[in-house]
Image (cartoon, rainbow, N blue to C red; front, side, top):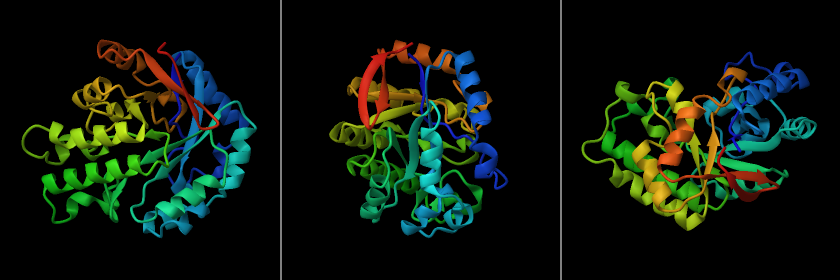
Length: 274
């Protein structure tokens, strides 16, 4: 089996309105692309910042600009299709109770946890770029992986998305000196402690870094720890569905990963990797 659980039915630009992209016709486009890519299990997980409900959790300017839609209407629409229902929920430190309340209001098939911000600075959005702040690469990477570990240990999420997003900009931003495994190790331990699934995302191959999430060394550490994996593309258009899966599946098999997670009603099971 091949899955693609981390996908968005609309692009990130502000013109991508709910009514334009939450349609049966658009779902059919994604399903057709999935079939062509050999993906049988397909789910949608829109960004929580798309929905007015998120402003109960956080008032970041980026969220206030983008929070236009109703979360219940999204759930109702997805349930009218053959897609699994998910949400990409940002981890907001200090707001765990509010995040939990928002999650509990709806019946998901899975909840994807993401870390896109360090305090109010963004890892992958130039308008709020964390790299403009007076912090060293060591400080940024340390804070990112500590925040990632906290998100896993919260117990709120079924899958941890793009678990080394901090590398998003690739050579456009400096790396910390030395062996990066010192950052990965505490994250792997947190994933083990939480029993959470780790997302293998091909999205990084489309980003400036040009590498899957997590990095092959990080992925190997997760595999050696016996962690479960969810396979996704983080698609924002039909052409992204199943992106670069052939090479990614080959790498997974080389690392001894022969099963992937399937979710329904927030219950996880493992299926043979297709």
